[in-house]
Image 1 (cartoon, rainbow, N blue to C red):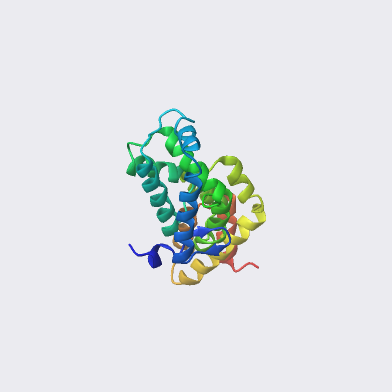
Image 2: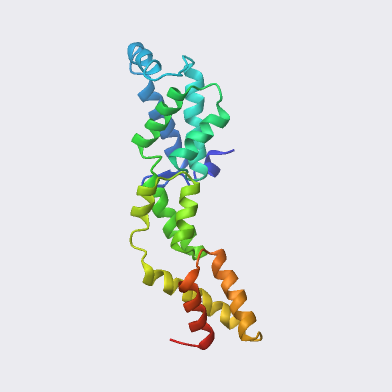
Length: 210
């Protein structure tokens, strides 16, 4: 895969990375790893389950940078990637690599949650509960999720559900009320809206309420 391809969406803090950014990131990793033989030896023994194969560590770090360039990942997802693709790395090695990615800002669960909230989740018009489920499925901690979704309240939920219900109601004019209600309810449910919020939004949409 070319540098140009995987650099298009790399999640460097605040910017899109160019191929030169990616190469600079890898050089930075190499420079941080090579201050002295003594520090190398200390890093190898800092955690249980480590390897003395410097080449393997370098390959794993660079592979993770490339994976983050292709698409943003949570800390848990990055750890799982290392487990899957580098089985001979110990837990300490994975921890060390993840910590470096955190320090460089290439991994940031809070930033990832906010990006998903304002990007893909907004485009799909998901409910707050659906957003929570998706973020948890990616291994993001509850406290981080709560902070990311703190500004989404009941009024926001209703307005989003109402917008969706009105759009579906316009497409359901040829249907009788009960059939339209059921179809719109199923549509909202697939986006995580349920209970009284969904019912109120559907009634308002079908009745033409403001």
